[in-house]
Image 1: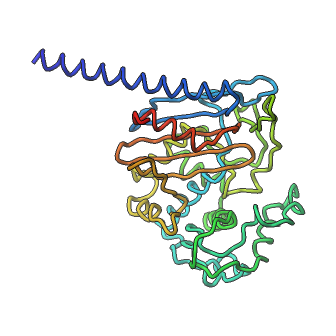
Image 2: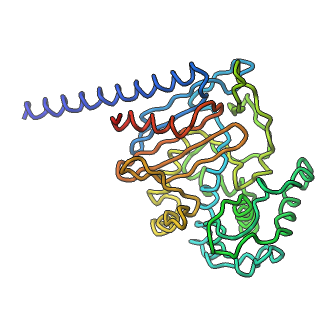
Image 3: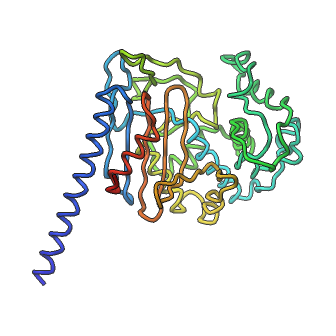
Amino acid sequence: MKKSLSILFLFLSLSTFAQAIRFARIDTLLNYFYANDNFMASLCIRLGDEVVFKQAYGFSEATKGVRANGATKYKIGSISKTFTATMIMQLVEEKKIVLTTKLNRFFPKIDQSDKITIEHLLYQRTGIKDYFTTDTTLAEVLGKPNMRALIMKKIENYASTFEPDSKHEQSNSNYFILGEIIEKVTKKTYAENLKNRITGKLYLKNTYYTSEKSDITKRESYSYTFNGEYWDKIDEISNDIVFSSGGIISTPEDLTKFIRELFKGNLVSPASVELMKTLKDTYGMALIRFPFGERKFFGHNGKIEGFGSTMGYYEKDDLTISLIVNGENYSQNDIMIGILSIYYKLP
């Protein structure tokens, strides 16, 4: 018996030592990128429910030398869509809407709203033009007190770009509309719904939606671009411009917990998770599949200002990873490949 226990303890010790070497190599790689002005970022890796790696590199406020740490909060861009889709699926489970609910119930002025469903919005198969990237007149409404209502009015005036459900096409308008629907159905703000339905349930203290600009005193980060000599701060846009399609603030640690708990069925039912995972033209209900060799991660990515974010979950290993970059001077995808290659002991 003593011999068996000794062998077990030796195995566990070797396993812990091997894991420590892997994480030291990841840290060395990311310190190399930072030291060579390739990026500023924060990474979290969660194995099961345990955070096994968490580290930030660079500054949240570079001009004043304010260092980022594991609690620094960043804008996550389109990863916000996964939060929005989760809240919509909760409303479906509560029978307040159904996936086949037509858009004309809420916004009858939108072109072909009698054909567009909640499901089409989730899958981004509507033909509704992207207000954020393709409307050259958007600047006319920016900064106005009723800006969100004015953006919605613009969306209502767009002509369809294709027949609903005929193909997938990225459009922030889809998830802007879904945020408006959440507020209409619940009679509560998007921020309140996010807190009540997700962040409060999971104790995600560093994830929220706000209309305010970034505040360094609240550990919120700015984003930067490298000009060849130093990191230049990028001008902010109001979160209300992107709203439920890209306005959430979070940390890599919170994102790893959110996506894992979603897949564990702790936010919506396993049946709803399966629906969200089901891909149509490579896109699910705010979920994307990221291949890494034979492994298939599910998650999402995002870009806003100079921030770039990735969140992924690999169910077989119960492994979750999130990287948020607030200064990019190198391919974020290549950095992520480097991190996972070290973790899985690949060249």
